[in-house]
Length: 526
Ligand code: ADP
Image (cartoon, rainbow, N blue to C red; front, top):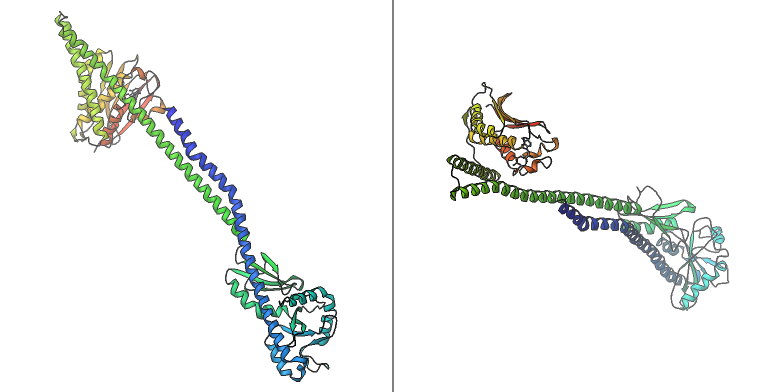
């Protein structure tokens, strides 16, 4: 039996636990990689959002450049001082555009501002500031200017930001425009990036960010930060990029609530918890399967033991009966006395056979839940007395001292007499079977609180403590001591328990190895 159970354990381990452990380890290892991949995908997404903001701002200024170019043609010759109103309303179309200037050629440092006359009469701007701003601007940024012209020759108008010496925070964007006569015109836009952020970018950023992200435009040197969400507690942005049109400024993005790291970590923790939980469930499942299989295997073993025990028990009386009846048949026995003795042995063994068969039938009825009991008013003492008398001679023949002690105060109780005497007979049978040298058996009746009891006491081999509960289980037989020399099927005590249960009674057992056992059956008084 142990072999089978061991084999099942090995199979369970190979089939379920090993793959499960392998999967779990694999899952935990790949978890990190997965999280990395997810983190990367996420950050790519954030990058794409930042890219779109950059693209948008470039589109805006590039459309400005086209309109500026057209307007410059309109007020050609820079005679704008003749029409200050027109210039003014032009500027009003471009929030954050501080000024437009034109430089006639690369080397010519003469720069003309749109909206500012020679005598500074129309003062839209602080001229000194712009002088400072544009000073050496073009010569300093020769390469950029060169590049812009090259692009222009290729038919493509490009915008390039250039660095300024100004401390006012203005940004300059250069592009090459064209006069109606086909001449190239180096043009510049002076833009206030903060104003640009508030007036132009803000609505777009808010539209992109919605509730999920906070998009920020910031310039740490100037301690400037604009966030798309007002109630956003300014924290470090998770990802940022330089703004193409204002290189001193950056755009950043962060997720509302948790950071990517938070999310990724949370996911990892949930996954590991889930895996842990799964493993535990799996282990419990395996344990339950193991328990069930072990029980089944044990039961199968017990059943096969039962069959062999019963066959063994049946064989002895059968062989005795056939032996003695054959002897009688052959007429070999002459003495009448001997014949009588043989006949009595045959009838005794036949009785024993029918008792065994009956108890098996009773047992199977009981197992099927079909055994019926009929409770009638009875004297427990009478039941005890009957069993005592029918066994007395037989036991004394076998060398037993058989005693009875009755408590005469026991009242009438409702019991199934036949069933109760069957229970007592089973107990007496066991007392006989499991007695060694000290052959003394006592049947006793009495009262104990609300119960009337009948008990059978022997001075036999006793029952080890650990087995005392199990002996009432069907097919169970104590495996130690000399029990195996004694025939039995392991169903006697389970029948006893069934009968007592049907009476709503109790069984008390006191037993000590090599000293004897006492089985007390208690029946409720009312
Ligand atoms: P069995 O047919 O084996 O006697 P039972 O159900 O009557 O089956 O008893 C179960 C087991 O309990 C026995 O095999 C024996 O080991 C133990 N047992 C029962 N009665 C006694 C007793 N009076 N003394 C010692 N052991 C007993």
